[in-house]
Length: 357
Image 1 (tube, rainbow, N blue to C red):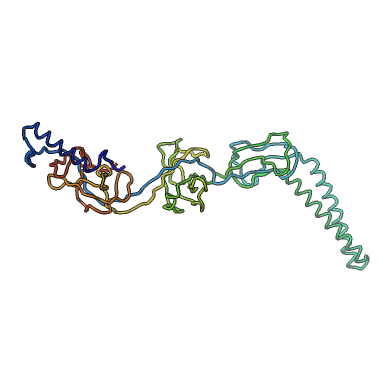
Image 2: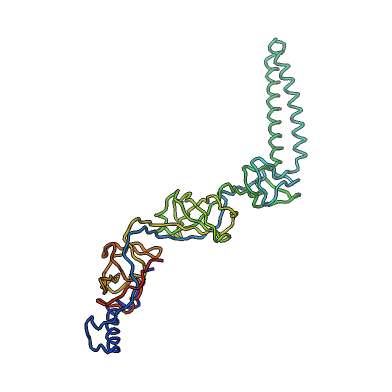
């Protein structure tokens, strides 16, 4: 952060002048003497240099499957058997539960028998009609009976298939809402199935920050469960609208491959760091070098063995560095520590090189 002095620049300079006189008198130099009697103040300094600067924000959100599917019963009935429990990994089409289908099976067998008989009559009448032994009306009647029997068999076959509740896609069972013996109704939720082939973190960012993001950009992700591990994420999508009340925009980040020894599970807390407003090769100084007075931001520039305040125009402030838009040249040294006793023209001795955080 930019250092903010407790007093305006004019007051800082006055205090520095008074302190210098007292120190000079204590040493026997006397009076308001010039630089010959002025004490040398040790300071740390660093050069203004060009570097990449990026503002970053970290947002917390839970790990979630890319989608969660509700598996519903398609018919009314009683649960006869359960073939899956929470945590089971299932494949597409796998039977998760069976309903009592004894009546439906009997109706299906009856429909198939009727169909077989209607088909035999229709095929026999086809030959008789070709030889003009039966009339067109008799042939059409047998054909209609065959079509109706075929439809009935398909109907009861579909109802029997509905008695077997299957997984619509591969995934992990995250919730089971019934037990064996439970009565279910049509469209009642029976299981929740998570598609964990891809895991995402959905977070919300300020509208001021989200304008710097784009789909496909890489981000850094850490997990509270594995604080030392770092995962690579990718912005999958930035939602098109902000929440009307919070003014926050949802952002979805897809997690990449997990490092060795790290198992990521839905529900884990993740911290996603977004690099915002990235700027390359800008002139920057360490944040402690910048002060703020009545006339705006300034730095102390080291000139030979003394310092001079210099007004500067600031840009991006991030990661312990401050962009200097105007007021400094590359390579000029600025004081990063030891400001408290400085005033224009103070004699200094650079004792250490100061840097950003």
